[in-house]
Length: 493
Image 1 (tube, rainbow, N blue to C red):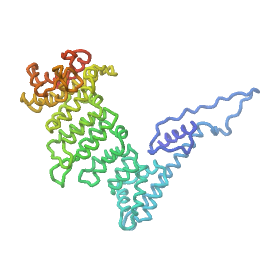
Image 2 (image 1 turned 120 degrees about the vertical axis):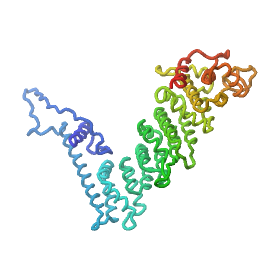
Image 3 (image 1 turned 180 degrees about the horizontal axis):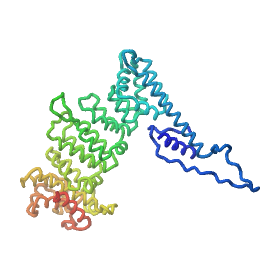
Image 4 (image 1 turned 180 degrees about the vertical axis):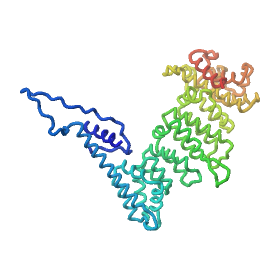
């Protein structure tokens, strides 16, 4: 490995770099390059015919690749010596036994030694310390006898937070001074480190810990770009249940949930540009909420509040996120329909209406429905999303009740905001974007149409499809995509 590292540095130097160029933060960073092949120079005869001699004594040409190799190996060797020497100093200063106590001078020496290194070297030294040594260090910096003053502690932790990765910061937080370490990371760590540190800590802590609120502050302060980069689908699935804050009030007590962190993280994720991440988070958190519906919730954030925040995640890019659910993540709407059921039973039908309004289109329903889109693999995305969403709604209704009147009432609730899809008197004065319009209550409209539909599913299907100018159901562009997505959600289970 040392030879590979040396070759890497040599390549950079021989390409015109400087031996003083910055070293990667990670001790193993950037070591995958291979050296350029070394070729013997081809002698060129001068005009007189004599061949010029090569470098004297078989030594490498000072300007050739071997010179870069030598310089690179010397640089890495010097770095390795610095890391080794600093590690010995720090380990020696942390000897805590009957005959050796860690005092203020030892702690100052550790701080100065680490501060004098490059960031990647500091990381390497801390990574080389054992958990016991880290425990001694964190315990002694706040010791009543010989510990660091508050300002010295803050400066030390700020320096470490700016140089260490999430793994080593998590080790420091576990060793002691957890709140101080997390607070320093909030101020000094890079955005990516903040998100990864939060993910590491969620798995270890519970809402009974006083530092729990600081964890999701790491995420919210990191910003959406860092959240995108750090949150792969695997990570999202693994962390979703931790976000719910399952904990015991005391050992052996019943498990309960505390949902403030989950709500804040979901709200932050709504600002993400990655629809796959948002769809994955929606699915993972919804499934976690549904799978723990037998566990009581404590704190100011209820299950319905969290489900509402998940609705905001959908609305943040309704076309993109619902399309991702439809075509890839949840094509049969198993999770989406369960979210809808929970929202209806939590009396948050208004959220479903607002999202439906987004999917219907802001101005002209028919024009929105027949937009061909830009992706040949998923044409007429608005029509497909609308079919998928309304298909999922019929599944949610089926799960709630088998009573026909109650089902009709639920359909009317969803479509109260879009009664203009039903042909009505030309004199209607409601300012909805589709005409001819009606200005009577949605329930009476739906009840009147019930006789024309063979099932509630067919009724929802007819309400969702736009109408042509003559009031008849539209059967042109986008109809196939609407129908296929609707059937996939409503009929194929």
